[in-house]
Figure 1: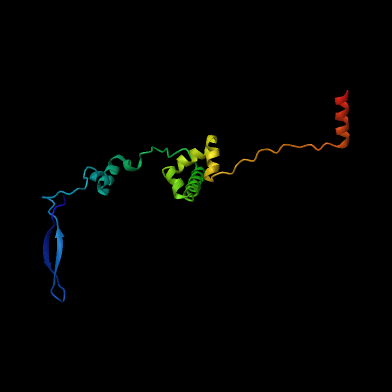
Figure 2: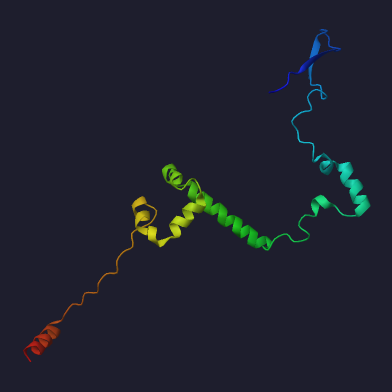
Amino acid sequence: MRPQLEQIYTATNRENKSKRIHPFMDKKKYPGRTEQSHKDECDINFIVKRFEKTGVITHRNNNQGSYGIATGIEFQESMDLVVEAQNMFDELPAALRRRFGHDPALFLDYVQDEKNTDEMVKLGLARAKKLPEQKIQKETKEQIQKRELEKEA
């Protein structure tokens, strides 16, 4: 439950001599809901004093010089791939996105599985594979005669 704010009236030097109302909360009665356990870690004065003593900025030294295994180019290519996949997923009809829980990763897993090819065709996500046409040989008159001679022999 939110504590009631006390109202303090202060006089102002306005032409119409109106009074302003300033909401005020007594911090002793209501300490507030803000977490105070990290206040020293966030205080710039405390950070500078610690740096003067140790020579190390601890709040910035969490990775110990190891910042990942990807180069800038690899990182950008990966991000471009993610954006492209997200955009393609976003272009799908809402019902289809809902089927995959609005998660592009689940959709990508689905379309990569060859077992789902027939269903993907039904959903309009893929084209049906054309069966290879059988090669039909046209027999020449000479081949027909030769075949008939072989049957007689």
